[in-house]
Length: 316
Image (cartoon, rainbow, N blue to C red; front, side, top):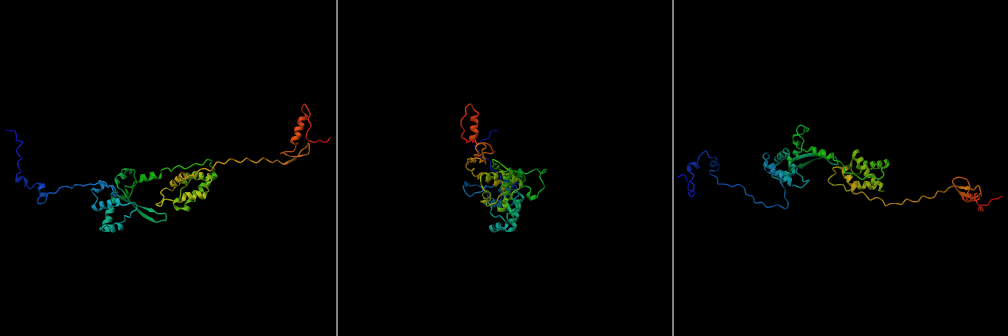
C-alpha cells in the first residue's frame, strides 16, 4: 500500500550517514559540547545610561578596542578630557594602542579634532565625538562640487557651518527719531566694546546692524556708560560664539522703558522794548514806536459818531 502510517516513529539516522567525513557540521562540533546563542536579560535603564547605535557596537571594520573607546567617550560628560595620556591612565592598554584606536575612530567619522584659538591667543585642540557620522556625511556636498579636503576630515559638515555663519542676526529696536549724530554715537560705543572685553570685537556690518538698537537706548535717557555696562557684563563663561547675536538679544530683551511723558513748558511772554507814546508821551512796550493802546482807542472813539473824552491828557 502506498499509504504511510503516521503513528510509526521516524526511522533513526544511520551511523554511516551521521559520521560522513564531508559533513561540516559534524567536523565543527565533533569533540565539543553543544553551545547555544546568547540570551539577553534586559532591564530598562532610567538613569545613568548612554544610547549606542548598532552601527558602532557591531561595526565590521573597527577593532574591539576602537569600539570600546568610542562607547567610553560617548558616555563622558561635555568637556571631559579624552587625550591619549588621560585614556592611558584610565585603561590598561598602552598609549600606542589607544592612539591607534583613536585614529580608527577618526578615520570612520566617530571622532574629529579641530584647532581653536582662545581669547588669550593660545591654540588648543578640541575633540568632537559624533554618535552618527553617516548622518553628517548625508548632508555633505557631492564629490563633484565639494572642495578637496584632508582624508581624515572629508566628513566634516562644512555646508552647515557656512549656513550658520550666514544666518541673519536677530532684529534690534529702532529709535523713534534717528539722527546721524545719534547713530554715530552708537557706532562709536559699539566700536569700543572690544576694549572692555576682547570677545566683543564686531565687524563693520554687525556694528551697523546693532547701531539703531544702541541709539534707542540712548534716546531713552540711558547714558553711554550704562549701555556699555549692560552689553559687556555677565558674558557666558564658556565663550561667545556670535558676539553680534548676543548683543542684539540683550539690546532687545533688556530694553529699558521709555522716560515718563513730560508736558512741554509754556514759553515765557515776549518782552518788547519800552517806547514813548507819540500822543501822551507815556512809556509803553511795543516792538516799534507809535501810540499806546489808550491813545489808539481814544482816536478811534473821536472818529466815531459820538465823541468820548480820552483818558490821555492833551495840551492845547
